[in-house]
Length: 465
Ligand code: ADQ
Image 1 (cartoon, helix red, strand yellow):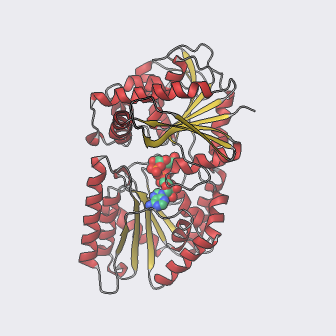
Image 2: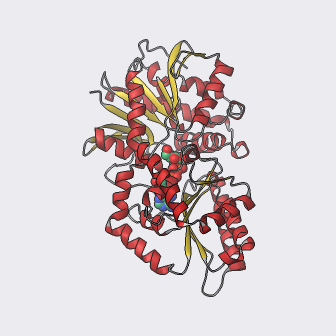
Image 3: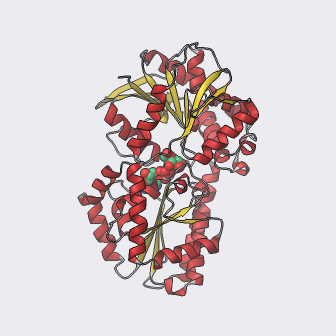
């Protein structure tokens, strides 16, 4: 059996827990199969010498990491990845900073990753590269003579060609994507955007069964929606820490219905829009005052990017004004916390909540939506209010789908969720859980790796960039 090599921007020790969908999902995959996980250590290098490679064993997984020097960190991570690709791929051209120096740093780090990874590879390795930080990695590896199969999965959305084309160097990026053997997306919509782009801009020709002939090679592209480990998550839900959290929440809010939001504090998650919808709920449906409380947990994220501090201030001010205007001596409408909740306790919070608000403006998938469903008591389940712009909406059709830009419409859906009779809640939950169980994280991993296993290994080693 081929060894699996995973490459991602950050490497997380699969024995420890971490916030962030990618770390959670990949930890599970590698723990099951064993292999090598390569990426940035998360640390900045000291001095001018080329940073050392750190290798350590974590059970069946070898973790290999390199540090980044400050200049590379600023250009590759803060600049290009989070200041250009993240906003544009989430349809936010207004937030992109197209500084010409960023793309050079992005390419430099991808070249350095390729140089450091190559000597560690074995001839029949299967390499799986993750996310927007590493789009050109396969091309850089191929330029150094790497002939192994290389797959790529994009965890965030891919916008339509006309938005993508706003990025200076978009053709170089897409050519980079076409240097992989398999390119996977979260949703059919993202996959279609890719197909539209390569046909329009690179004269790609269909080659049957998800394959394309493009830039003189054959690639496979498809949608592989990421899932969660439903069994494992239900196990965590029933363990003492989550059970205790559940009991505490039930006691504390015995007279009230709890609504919950759990997100990284990111402008793509639609947090101000969510707060405005909640405010509209209180305004339009007076019976919800005193009877509903929203707990919003937003974990700190990318605080060195200015758009993130702006969203933090906007959210704090909205929560303050809702509590100021609607709060009573014995009732605060919103409890907002700027922190991460321990993964062991999170399912208890989900289970104690009648409604989850998962209302991103754009999201590749959104695993909180899936975790909320998995944590529910099937006899008395809560209701998921889900943005139609989350990748998860393609699969989770029995959720209450909303347009997060429509404040009144979202408030009405939240009201409906709060009122929903038990039988309807059960029916919807049953279908959602069945979908989740069928398309779990193991399905995601197996189906992607099966396609990659069937792909022809790159034979020529031709440089593609
Ligand atoms: P993220 O944007 O990080 O991931 P998401 O899918 O919601 O978003 O994953 C978040 C994970 O972190 C979940 O497991 C959640 O429980 C945890 N988390 C978030 N906020 C937390 C908090 N305040 N406290 C504790 N835990 C918290 C990216 C893409 C997504 C895609 C994933 C996986 O943006 O669209 O679903 O990768 O591919």
